[in-house]
Image (cartoon, rainbow, N blue to C red; front, side, top):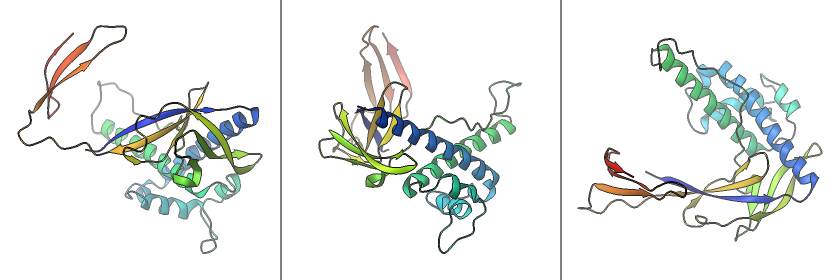
Length: 239
């Protein structure tokens, strides 16, 4: 099964303009995801059966006018999110549909009686999402070879512009797997760019043992160990 490992690099924000641009970009992205969630849930019978990029096509027919499709069901989006980058809009669509799909799955499980306890309340579809934007390829983010600088497309003065940032941090995985789209995140104090890489772990050699010993060396606590087999069953553990 493929695994993903990410390098997290800090953005060196040197001015109030950069801070404001990053904040405005995140706020507007989250607002778009929130609005898209309402559309996705309203049209879930049509949206929910789609997979992959087919979801984007169905949603864009509802919100995004083009020359060949000048009339759409929801004209609000073209006015409120004017000039919103197309790749970032598609990321927001996938984000919104994913959250609605998660809610529908959990709600159906609750309806079928799969609950933690008898009086468990049903899950809610909350629009107060704390999601972060994935910056697709070179369309929303450009990173140099040694990952020391990045250009990110941000919202500034009611327009979308490329803004440069210096990156701080060490890359352990970059260039060793298949690069995926960077993720723009913040913890409230510092902005970061997460650079994920997709890896295909090597298959165990024939005749290799079906159990492994894993050791977690604690910094402030004692080390722990466990013996696990290929199915994930823990056969022994200790401290």
